[in-house]
Length: 125
Image 1 (cartoon, helix red, strand yellow):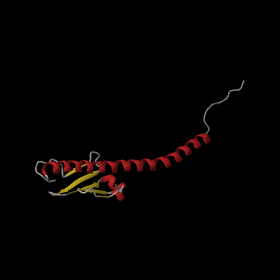
Image 2: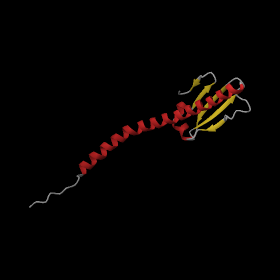
Image 3: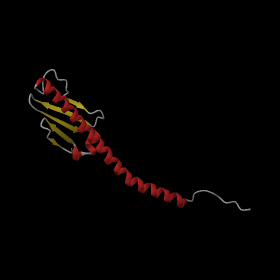
Image 4: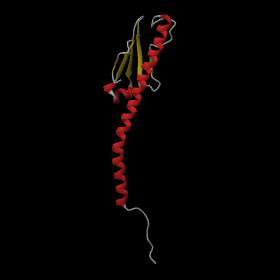
């Protein structure tokens, strides 16, 4: 009667580790690119939301900077990756989203987005 041992050999274990290493080398850069895109989208949405508020103000009071308007002129996005600032005049505005902290360090190529009252944009839209 012979007993057959069951288990994993060191070579099999090393093959599995090598495969997992190769997969992680492929997946991690894709993951970081996707999270960067999501953070950029949050900045664009913040600019668009602020612009919509300013346009509502203009349609009611014929001025973007009317005292009754409650659109904030400076705030951080909910995720804290961008600061949105508004330069508002009676007949125009320019909105800017500037990257903060780790977003600035990881995405210097798209550190600033702008949007004005004419719909003109700069940055990585």
